[in-house]
Image 1 (cartoon, rainbow, N blue to C red):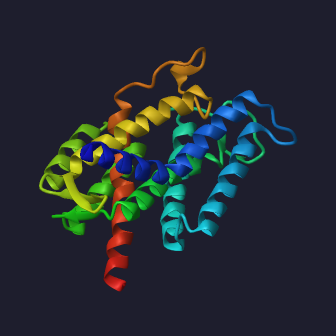
Image 2: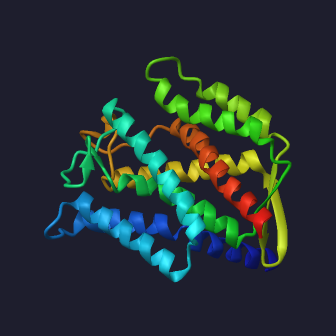
Length: 254
């Protein structure tokens, strides 16, 4: 019963931390089946995301510092979307007034929701890092990961080399977290894999509800290739670095 209680507590903290992503998924589902007046569906999704962001800040669910981190990741994600849509990796087929080069502005919030989850889970679970590698190693690795999303269209895809470097760099690193006053720990690389996998699951839900579509989903929806887990795993490291930098900086100044 003690283990079950801890599992319920952990699940509850995770559910609260996933509030922003859940709102996005619910909005995707509802706007697909319920016609909305005045604005196209993509624009309504942008309005909902902006309203949700405002409510989370006003209610204290997110701090101003966390909002800054989320905004940075919003910009990073939107830049990636603009490039990938231009290269034909995926598309947003529906109409929208607030689209830039075929990319609806709400799409950046889907990336920002990942950073929102990390920030809130970090705070609720009192996350701490053990043997976090030096920033002189982590920052260039994260930069190489992000750049590879762009450069592999013109050069070779080195994601598997980068994945191997991730194992080497973070091999001795652990993440600790607290549930019900008891601290637990897991290898940091395992946490990357788990978050990447669940983002892949979320991606399948999002494409099912028409958030965007891959070329192989034009005629009918199909499962996103499992290899995308590796892409999300690598992108999680970029967002994890940004959040970890904020938390460590705030820890030194408080």
